[in-house]
Image (cartoon, rainbow, N blue to C red):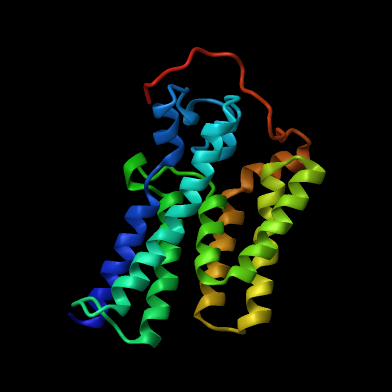
Length: 220
């Protein structure tokens, strides 16, 4: 199969995997309210946590993080194997990186939720793990420290997004990996524009803040 078609197939696969809305899937499984109907309206782990169900929030976090890594792992396995989708090692690295980016875009603009997705923090971490464990570790440490000190999920995400591209560039220089990480983090920051405005206004909600009481619903 021509290399370009293989690349397109890998990227499309990554996007579809990234589009899986684990916040909605987990909430329905636990009989919780649709996370798009309260709090920030964001289908992500932080909003699921606002229901008070920490286990459901943890499953959402793990699912959103895993889908980015899993998509890249599958592409790496298939692309390196003796199949019609096998490509050269140099080309495979680029395909893996852009598959991760596609998974991240799938979370932001999921086809299964009419292109209205989450902020992409957990998925970005999963992609970073697949791209470079050291970059992911430093970004995760930045996230944990920021959220422990300030208790703002959005601020922690922004801090990690600002740190990751610099670390990637320091370790790899101006290569494809650094480019993908830079694009991903820039998009993550853009997706947090409303949060940035609320942070400056002092109206941003902290984590573990529950939404106004409302009866659980399985309806979207």
